[in-house]
Length: 300
Ligand SMILES: *Cc1c(COP(=O)(O)O)cnc(C)c1O
Image (cartoon, rainbow, N blue to C red):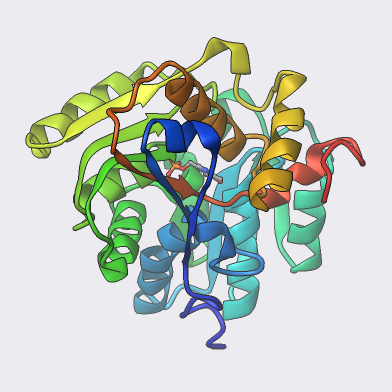
């Protein structure tokens, strides 16, 4: 087994964002750049995979099976990791037979197999669990979610030893990252999950559960219909992304983090944050997904 995956290549970087409107309101705004954790496995997928990998080693699995969409950051990260660890890899992809994307090209180049499924079979967890058991593979659910994924996020934040923030904001998909941050030692008052357009009815359930567990904290989910549904985006969003890159040297991904930064900007514009607040934005990575965009739309 190679050792390349066990430690981040660069340590996480806290970047301070300067802006006249932040100064006017006396807001201290920082970004935790977990997109810089690893050159390939960026952000929260890196964190979430750690306990899953430990489990695979512990069980002597010879392969990893997991699933996602054709541009999935998780599938991309899990495939690279399996390749590094000498494990076989199968991606269950929710798409028409044979569909190819830049993400799936990488999966193939790293020696992964792709199984295309749609609708009912894709969602059948029991089926994929059995499929995995039959080949001594560890089955990782979509997005690396579950207790292992949550633990990986909490472990990562526990090691950071950050100081207190009034607000912490992260993007949500399965909600595993949000739950992991809530479970960690990171000191904060309010944790906000920015919905990338999934509008999942289960979010309310998740939030209630977390709120009961961590009753001294405030937990919220924010959403903005003008940002369109998951995977889609309004024309103004790539323009915003170019502005942030020029202003702050801050790259964002169109699916998750750009939608989070936009919602954060809207909150600042409406005076949502108390003056003198300290705010931490979590950059969860996902930049490989920008390869889905027309060439030249994003400045580099
Ligand atoms: C997967 C992903 C998320 C969502 O994380 P969850 O733990 O599933 O909520 C957020 N941001 C980025 C960049 C992602 O790739």
